[in-house]
Length: 142
Image 1 (cartoon, rainbow, N blue to C red):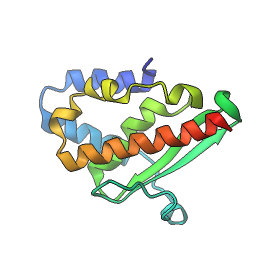
Image 2: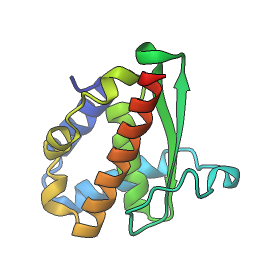
Image 3: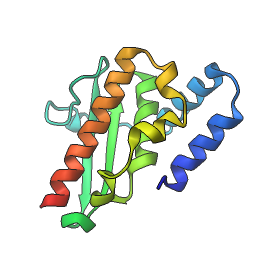
Image 4: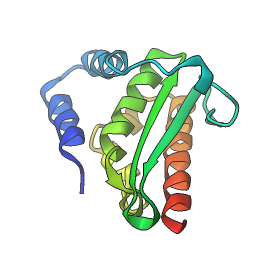
């Protein structure tokens, strides 16, 4: 069920042996994202439960379960920007009805992130996933 963009990240992780290299790769993914405009860095888009400042701006095209989900995001922490990029690869471009079916825990476990992120970062990652799932669920029900 994983998208090609996410599969590419998985393959790159498998190629990189050292966790320092994997962290650098995640950070590079974040650096490649367009920054979020200040106008979107507001309480309504801020993700609660993250140690860093994190904003996720959903972009829904269409209506109902067939609507397409995407989002833009940003953080004040480079590693978290990279995690946002990973989540974008996992969720972006899916139907909203499919977003809520993704087993993010299992997919992200393929990267080994659960073993190498601090508990605060892991909690923040779960908070971002939950925000994405909630937005997609609301859009699917509309």
